[in-house]
View (cartoon, helix red, strand yellow):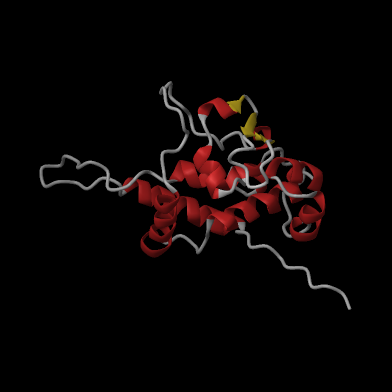
Length: 193
């Protein structure tokens, strides 16, 4: 008797575009307009850069929230062992996702994203309930990144960057989507260009 292989959840290109459009609507609505046309303080933090970061790096929620600017070195994002689920350091390949890391704009900040896990989960619910995003989770974004990474490049590169085994990449992600031939980035593989 053969074992049934579970297929991981991932978003299709049209769902990815819907999600990012919902994020942009969310971010545009972060300020309330007063009657005189001035804006209040933000109701909630902009979420588009964070969702895009999760989508293009495949990081787990806790890993993404702990990333510091010092962890980024050119085309490499070093995930520290202390924040990794596997308790092992790994390097995330940013050369395949040039728009993953938001611009620092010279701000002297430590962490890239100042969100808590609860705030990120609340934003996910808001995006789906109030802004028309397709149902998703941080884990679904990780599965989406893994799927497109494996299909656009190869299982070994995907496993090395995302932090799972080559066997997992081949079993759960390989062949799930057709990507444009010769696409050099995850953005191109996901149809975001």
